[in-house]
Amino acid sequence: MIRVYLTIILLITSGAAVSDDPNFLIGSWVSDKETTISYHHEKVKWSEEQYKLFENILGKLRVTFTETTVLWSYENDSSENKYEVIDRARDTIIIRTKLDKEDLEYFDFESPFTEIKYFREGNKIYTAPKMSKSLLREYFKRVE
Image (tube, rainbow, N blue to C red; front, side, top):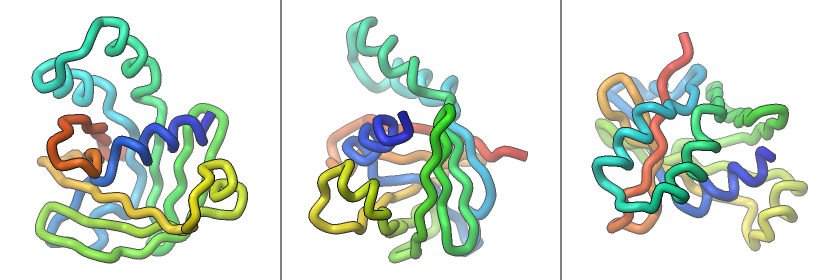
C-alpha cells in the first residue's frame, strides 16, 4: 500500500517546507487531513466522488527525516531512503532521494533519483505538484 501512496505523491507532488533553520525537516510529520481537505474545498473543483477517494488516503502517511534518511510509513507499510538537500530558500527546500532497487523496479523509473519539493506555511509543511498551474497539495503537521 505504501507504494500506491508514494506513486500518487510522486505523480502529483514536488514540494513541502523550509525555514532559516537548515534542519527544519528533521523530525516526524503526519499527513494533516483536515487542512488538506479544507484547502482543496476552497481551491479545487472536484466531484464528491473524487473528494471521497482523495479523503480516504489522507491522514495516514507519516514522514520522518533524519540528517540523511527519510522514512515514509503508510498504514502497515514503510519505505526508507537516503536523501540530500539539493536546494533551499527561506520557505522551500528540495530534496533528492535515491530509491532502492525494489522501489525503482516498482515505479519503473529509469533513474533511481527523484526530487521532492517542500514548502513551509506557518507551522506546517506541504508538498505540491511539479506542474506550476496545479493546485493540488498535501499538508503535514509536526508530530510532537
